[in-house]
Picture 1: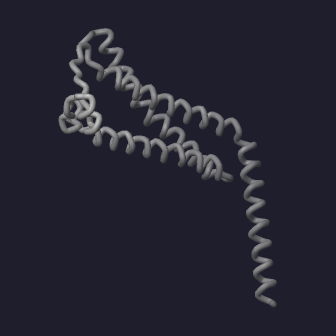
Picture 2: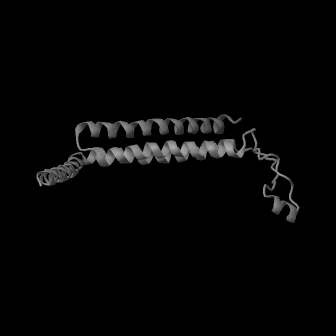
Picture 3: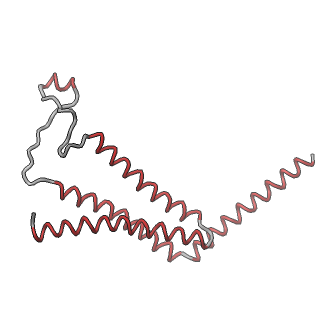
Length: 164
């Protein structure tokens, strides 16, 4: 009987602490609303910079006079419609399609980890240390992905001006 009463008291205090932390989070977000919105804008620009860097990189890789041949990888379609055999799934530049997909998947995982870490810090911060961590992650994303975009943009503008 005494243990049940003790467990009930512990559960009640845990509930009160959880409710107080939720209240602290909402008050802290209300107090630092401007800083958190600036961090949100930085993260959105970081994602746009990343997409822009991918587009610019793909635009830089396109050849002026491509000589592409299409091959069929599916053996049943190849036999029925008379397509040519695929040469070991190798694309231009010597990288296989699986290597390209693996690189894209790894890049997506890294970007998702950055975004999830920011969202987690943004939602769970209720003190000064949490706010500083949120700001640092937002600035890190902005600097890292913005640097990549600026490098690609500068190279593309250089190609447009001086040609190559």
